[in-house]
Image 1: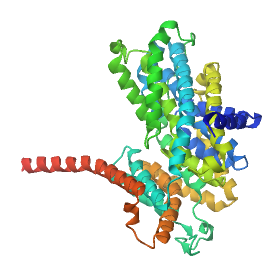
Image 2: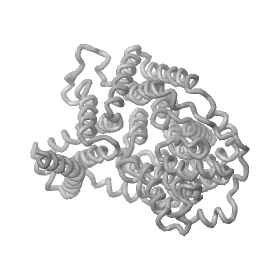
Image 3: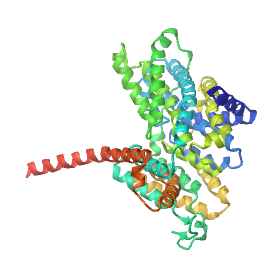
Image 4: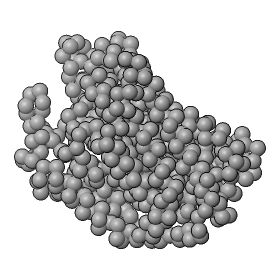
Length: 505
């Protein structure tokens, strides 16, 4: 089928009343989460995932996707009004957005942020519709060896997701792979790492793990730093939400450049939205004729980065939907959501579930319209919500965690499991081990093990086939290159330290 037929399938799916409602609900929740510092889309999707089990898979993924890109919209509100980014990708918006607010132009900053996000999101949806089928067709050529090598590449690429050392990231990946093997072996039927707990017969639950690592751990970290949530709220009347002709003249080119840059960055493993927004800001500052105004309230410093992070958030769906490889922690949760609903993300998803595949893509266009309609009229409401103390919010989040973990199997063991991973997540965060690589490895571990076994059975145990098959060899070569790129700076640093020590002696 051509692109028009595919889009027709998608719009027919996403524009049903049922899916419109869940798209609206996801966008509303996402905006709210983006407005409230200290939550974030990862923790929110982890909390709400159990509530989608009774939904149709398409509606569930549409709502969860809406939470993700909705949070990118909402994150700009706190950056502009409070100088606190609701999302990491909105950090750079603080630089000029807050300065515009201090000069009485909060309305213009919020307006160009919303319109820029809408333009970028619309561009990203159509780019996604054009690129995704080509990538999926290419991926259909993959055999077990290619999939195994691709997962290896994805896991090594995870090390670029974190701010810490490569060693810590690799430790988290190994731990995630180990946790994915807990339970009964699907081939031999033998129990693995059960340690006498019959509840682990089917493996560790995805929901208790993510709720512990992202929900409970986030609460503990935020309570420890409760003073950081005491913030001064912008109290002046917000007016002039529609950008002026001069604002548009200065912002249109940065919006289009940010859309293209952000979409490309979003397709890559790692913090695409963060890199896209910072890259857009750096680019606009370099080429702008008003470069001296950057950091003092330049509207280009809001328009470009906001367009980039919203385009990146939707570009991240390409590797998820076409290859089944998540590019960030939120995409990893969506992989888990698809699996829980009995679907395997990857190139066959477009063939086996075209309604879901194209429905999710076209729902993003609907979501961009809804977010534009939500963000501008409800600015006053978001400002009031910003005043809600965290001491009131965290008990509600904790209740969601408990209900979500228990509703999976109605088993108290899952609550203990969630608490255990909550404490583990807190300790890991304190030791600067980020949980994202662990989650990605946990999600991809079963696929990696399954494809490795299939390849060995097909090739009679001959490991050389992993390097004699061209695509598999390319993926393994890229994996090696990424490892070298990660190791080289550490080796150089160690060498320079050794030289300094020898000179001091």
